[in-house]
Structures are given as structure tokens and as C-alpha cells.
Image (cartoon, rainbow, N blue to C red; front, side, top):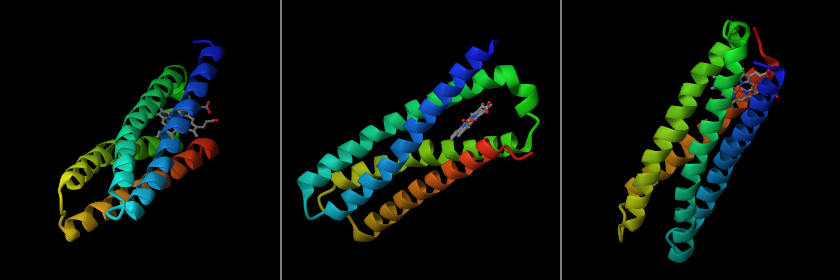
Length: 156
Ligand code: HEM
């Protein structure tokens, strides 16, 4: 594989990271706005809940680009990066990112929709979902920062 293809994959990697990490941050901001408007302003919170649902798709697209480009780069450099510590830790964190940011986020998004559709949601259940939502988003942002540090410093 030529160096140009490797660099093209790295560009795609950064595009995917921008999309996924950027969307995760917007997700956090929009959920905060939703939490401030609900239940006082139902019209506004409905718009925000729909927006939160849309964001899920962009998280998936970002992850797809990251994986595709990452695997392309590894086709050329697996013998170098594959053996290094930063890369191995990064792959473990990647699994947590997928579980947390795609898996748990999707489940919580569905629960939020169900609760939003209920006329008078139980307060404790509402509080539980809100706390979990914040936790998932916070963990996701911390994971991104850790992966950035590993990928740039490349500790070995
Ligand atoms: C959440 C997932 C991921 C994030 C946030 C992420 C982030 C990054 C960042 C910030 C860089 C440094 C880019 C630069 O040097 O300018 C990088 C490089 C790299 N990533 Fe990822 N990455 C992710 C997933 C993956 C996956 C799944 C693979 C492989 C299967 C991978 C393979 C690589 C490789 C080989 C490099 C080194 C490129 C180089 O310096 O030549 N990454 N990644």
C-alpha cells in the first residue's frame, strides 16, 4: 500500500473522529437543554428529543469512518503499531466506546422516548434515566480524550 493511501486513510480517520467526538459533545449540550425545558415547555422539549434521536445516527456514521480508516491504516502498519502498548490499550478503550456510546446510548435513547410519550412519568424513573444519560455522555467524552492522548503520544 502506498504512503498516499495511508495518509488518505488518516485524513478519513480524523474526519470520523471529528464527526463522532463532535456529535458526542453536541449530544451532551442538547441533553442539558432538554433537561432544562422539560416538563415546563413541552413543545421545545419535543423538538430537542427529536434532535437527540437524530444524533444517534451520526455517532454511528463517525464510528464507521473511524473503523474503516483505522483498519486500512493497520493493513499497512499492523506489524509496527499492533505490537505497541498504546495501540493495545486503545483497542480496549475502543470496545468501551462502542459499548457505551453506541450500545448504552441507544438503549437510553429508546427509554427516553418511551418516557417522553408517557403523560405523567414517574419521577424516580425519570431521574434514573437522566442520571444514566449524563453518565454515558461524560464517560464517552473522557474516553475520547484518553484515546487522543494515547494516539498522539504513542506510549510504548
Ligand atoms: C474511538 C475510536 C478512535 C479514536 C478517537 C482515534 C483517534 C486517533 C487519533 C487522534 C490519532 C492521531 C492522528 C494523528 O496522528 O494525527 C489516531 C491515529 C491512529 N489510529 Fe485511531 N482512533 C480510533 C480508532 C482506531 C481504530 C479502530 C484503529 C485501527 C483498527 C485505529 C488506528 C490508528 C492508527 C494506526 C493510527 C496511527 C496513524 C499514524 O500516526 O500514522 N484507530 N487515532
